[in-house]
View 1 (tube, rainbow over the protein chains, first blue to last red):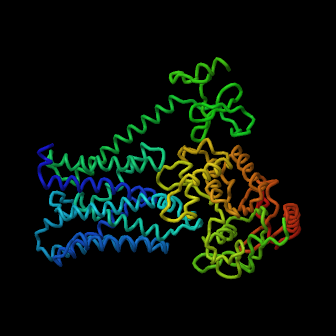
View 2: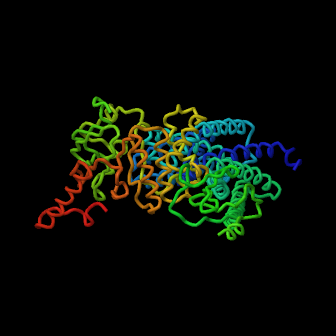
View 3: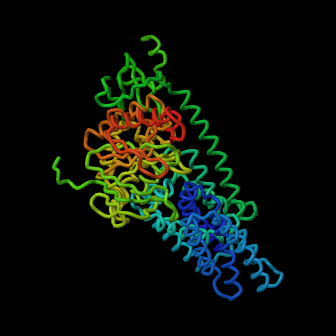
Length: 339
Length: 257
């Protein structure tokens, strides 16, 4: 571990991975919410054309990639807003055109030797320079700041665009903002996991977080945590195991997803076993509903024919008798006796 | 109520549609504060196009539309008109709590850099109280029943304290128990003087709440009057249909159940 950290390029690599692990899931949750999980992939394709132009003109591939990705992201939103059925086909044209142009231009500029191309497609984190690292950190801070500031508005628009428009939110502006954030994330992540795998780090930690969290807020934080574990853990593991960093990060993220799914379903099964639905009744309890309200920890139970009903999800649970029931007493025995 | 109160909605020869094509035309309608309108009509008649036009979701193509004293195109504060859409999913592809969904109803009223604070949280609690969901505030909306989800959408519309509430099929596809609760919520809103436009197929669920009925058929208003008057109108249509051929018959089940 200390050996790995003593290496300059590995320190840079781990810091770059940290940036990506933090911001990719932050942006990705809104893509998952909009059911546009693959759009990051498409923007990555177009970014390759930008990279190629940068390489061919001996400029900075990072800046030209940023420009190409941002243009693509804005164009996507404008096409979506116009709602034409041909929009889907336009996206395909743009994405494949991007990757094809990228390959052609890079090969033309660098001859048949395409080490550079592979580096951008699958990541080449250990070649991250100090200057790039600083740029990635600044861009990551920009993404994180924007998301933290606008997260509720982005949530509203991604969740129910029609309602957001009716309520007067600037829907197109927010969607374009999300598109630009996605584009910047793609460029920041390009070095670490590569343009072909970027989408995975935006989406997979969020898929895992959805298995563990019950609220949007909690899911956002879970996703960031899992994203950091996957990216930093994946880069470290790739050093120890001598494997490709980008692929290792994504495989680790998928392993975390598998663990989260297992933990999530176990937890749900446990919760099902430990609580008991009340009998179905047409009546909904509430203040002044005619049933006595009894305070029970952080909620209120309603006394219904001698047993206690507490709201849970879409139904009512039976809660135990007595003021403070021990947790092992599920109320099952007590209830049956009094019935 | 003072007679001088300006109407909440005033439509004169209004037409609404999509992409420049009119779906409803020649609508003349005046709605006063506190009125509860049921908008009836068969599927595809244009009733949803009409009410969503008031929200800026379908295009206002011609005629005059004044909402809360302001021409529709110049109505900036959209939160004054609350909207309860007919929705199957509430949050897209992610989990979210009841509180998180209802809070989105307040966002457009806040400056873009301001996150919701204590005052907004209190407004959300009050809206959830009003629809009887206060004790389910922290649960994932996807775990709630269909009727409870409808009430979440009503709370989201109520939270910004709108002056008019536009609802699209609030009772459709909801089990009987939830319909009773929903009817109670709508009744309380009506009592409190909220102006409501309710697009519906199920007039029985709204009995005693609605005080005016508007019927839309093939893009035109075909009836505007009291529920009693509507029953007479239905009876006339049925008799006309029974008497001879060549007369347009009402929908198979008499349009209302």
